[in-house]
Length: 64
Image (cartoon, rainbow, N blue to C red; front, side, top):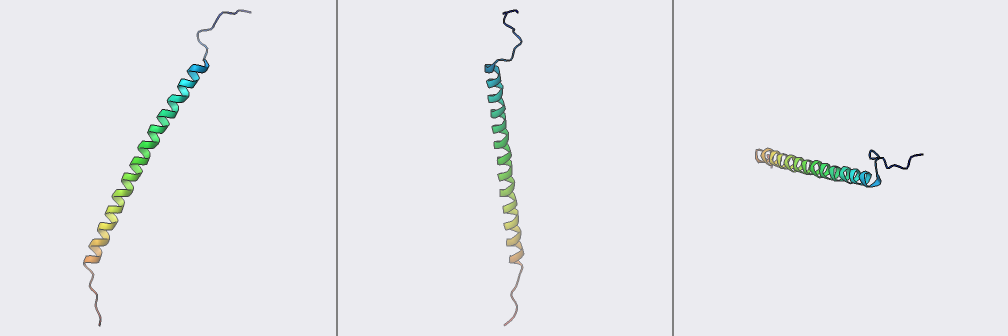
């Protein structure tokens, strides 16, 4: 049995570094996706309110 240290082993420190890197990438990705979703929601809300304002500006109430 050889007690020589293998250089190609995957240590716990390397695993922790890879795990932290995955977490950071996932956090950045989710931040970007949420930002894009909020931006899209805001733009669609502006479009709907603009369309409702335009539609109601052309309506006339008729009757007594």
